[in-house]
Image (cartoon, rainbow, N blue to C red; front, side, top):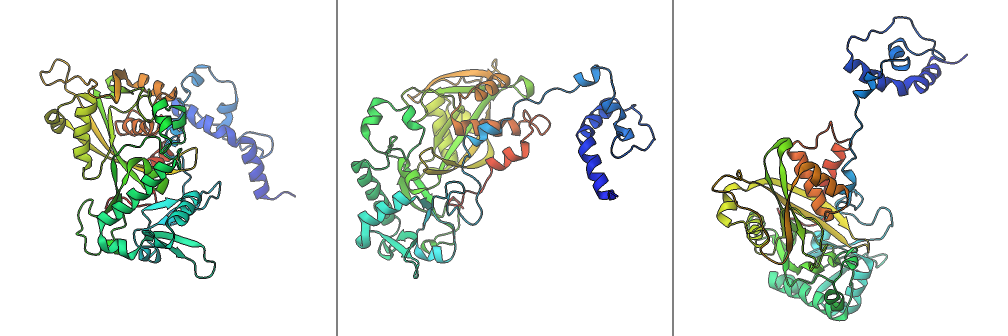
Length: 430
């Protein structure tokens, strides 16, 4: 004789799929009554599902609209490194490629602090072969296996401070540039967009001569005398294009300029110059740029607004709104790691007939044009793959913050939020 538990499972298997439909019907037609007779567990539908499986007016079904396509895939274009456990990712969860932590001081590894970067096997080998025991790096080995557990600066370099660390990283990157090593490091997709001049360079194809700030844990042995202040855990700088080689985090600012509110909102969308080193010709956020060492996020966004969109500093400072931060972890198709943090800003423009109105227009050679798009037009461009990947993520963040994408319209709302605010496992400002 079957048990009550087995009958319940069979009933659930038979009628479970209909429950959601009936509940939707009942919400739209609250007067729908349910008969009282008890069903047979095997053959008869539960009485409260009677109207869900019997003929009902067609208009009931027309009240349910198909959900719009999820925006999650466009967020995953930027946050495409699988989530990891532990302080930092020790390996790729799918390919199992091992990552060696790069610390400022060897003591930081012993203290189980998060590293400043993550080295792929090929990069680690290049450091060991080229630098050896006489170079600026210390290779900490497991006493039993002799495997390298981490890489750090030597005590001699640490004693000389920031400038010595800057010089060590700069010398390594310059030597690799000269030798043509790791040409695909900047972005695995970049080779699809290279100009002949960039392809002839032969190295990290977007070499910029710009330094990015690299940050250590505030508890690092190298920061024992450093004051606790915003960005006070900066330890050295690295050429922007080389950051992905070392697995260092990079930092930027993204601003969305818009007119109107709600369903009447329109967004200013630029198209990147066809001569840009990365993602030429693709759509972007209204203004965006990397944060060079020595600049704050606010200083950077004000500067970029002038350089990219001809928006005067006084105008921007008066209207700019700090909207938080997004964090995501990008891995190139070639396997290089690019954890990124973006500081987010909104810029609501005044009415067109206002004396204060300023029209965004290209100023330097990084932007080809600006176009004012409705929200549906902007989303359509995103779904068509026209946006630079991380700019698509920032756009989704903007739409969510302004109530244009909601839990009722986006089936993956929570998962999207998690992918835009994740732990990256390497040094960042504190």
